[in-house]
Image (cartoon, rainbow, N blue to C red; front, side, top):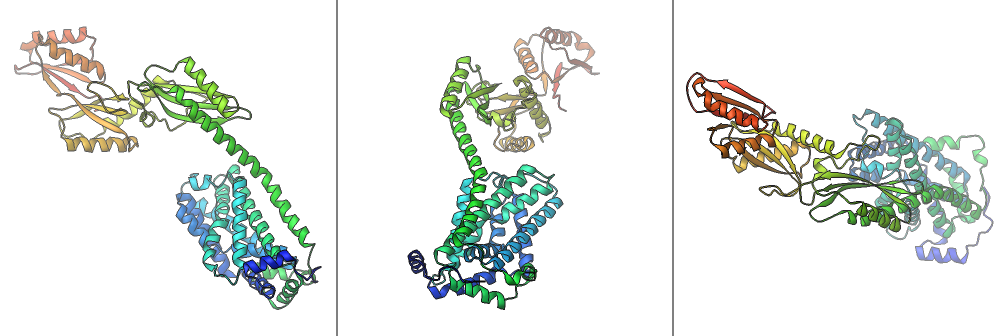
Amino acid sequence: MKDAEEDEPSAIEEVAGERLGVAPWDRPLIFREAAAAAVDNGLPYWLVLALSGAIATLGLALDSAAVVIGAMLVAPLLGPIVGLSLALAVGDSRLALQCAAVVGGSLVVVVATAAALTALLPFHTLTLQISSRIHPTTLDLGVAVCSGLVAALVTVARRHRLSTAIPGVAVAVALIPPLAVAGFGMAAAWQTDVIRGALLLLGANLAGIVLSGVAVFLLIGMHRGDVVDAARLWHEEATPPGVAGLVCRLPGMGRARVFGSALGRAVLVLGFVVALAIPLTAALTEVVREARVRAAVDDAATVLEAEGRTSILWRQVELGPDSATARVRVATTVGVTAEAREAFRRRATELAREPVSLRLEQLPASAGTGSGLQALLGGGDAPDEADPVPWPETVSRAREALERAAWSLPFPEGAEAIGVVLRVGGGDPPLPADSVEVAYLAPRPLEPQAVEVLGRALRQAVGHPGLRTSFHRAGPAVLVLEPADTAGLGAVIALLRTYPGLRVSLRSAPSDSVASSGLLEALRAAGVDSIRVERRPRPGPVELRMTGAGR
């Protein structure tokens, strides 16, 4: 190596050194300590690194932020990256190659560990912890720059007790999680978008950390001749292990010298950061646009709502190249007018500053706010754009699913479900808004404890813990009716029309055929056809027996 062009520190370097507590004679020692930490990559280093990658992968799969943070705390990757910043500031090509080899090998080890562990997992779900690391923006680059500044300051400020900040620096640097995400994307059917986003975030973190580290090291004069001399002596004395040691034994490494000027090296790193900032800025612009359009849709959606008549259950924004589409699902008792839809489009387009179209799906409601109908009708899922399901069919599917769940409920002996009424408030008697009413037949009303148990079982069966349930006794399973009992007969007919799946049977002795025939004629005249007649050997009252269709 050769001495730097100027050995005398500038006024800026003197002031910065004084403020940070770095004396001129401290700089060679800072180099030795940082360089030794950067190339210390023996077997323990690689074992801890692989384990940190495994911990991060499991944390991502479990969607646990605490586990991911733990992986960052134990990862030993910060030392080689700070060493790379130091080498670029000093102009030490030999140390730069050693640190680059260690960093590159570390990246490969973590990605390979994450991919191998992901391949062994029984599921490959894209969790929130994963998805949050595949859409980086320039804000992530800003975080990396700040993290690099902290790492460099902790390294140079030897006279200040900043060692307690090192764990926080490890978390802020956040290099292990994007590497684990990249490995996940490779093992989970090679998801290109996941891999690309994770590697872009990794590049942003590396570039920001190295850039700010170079800036701090140059600011305190680490490119001066005394540090260059210390670097030369250190290379003559030190024998680094592992990958760094292999680099030392490459042909020509003994003749490595200071490369370029300090300004040229800084510009080189800055150029790499600017190159990465281009796609990151484009991503940030898209994030800002999406936030603006979503806010516009949220504001304009108020024109679609009407107290007690129409309520929004679900909405989604789809961004096109030059326009956006708002897909909205509402529960309504009267329907959304064309004027309201046009008012929505005008308002959303004005606020979003780009054309916004509306795709509206209307679901029937009896009354109330309809806020809970989203869970009942699967409102959390986007409608199928290629094959949209009309709302009558959607409601029919929801009712069928609820009926299947109701028929499987553990009713007490002598009681059974006969049907489900899907309500959005209202009803007679009035029900809580957004509830499911389960009708049942039983000799007497259920005890409150039984109602509580059945409601909990229904919520668990349909997978919606917040679902409101109520249980309505439609009547006893066996009724004794006379042909002249018009009130009782009318109640039975209304019940059969409400729950057409009910099975009905008439039980009577042959001597009671006149009475049973009168009931049969009255029921069939009302449109009830599915009636079975049973004869019993002994005389007795005519019984009308009803059973649920789900049994």
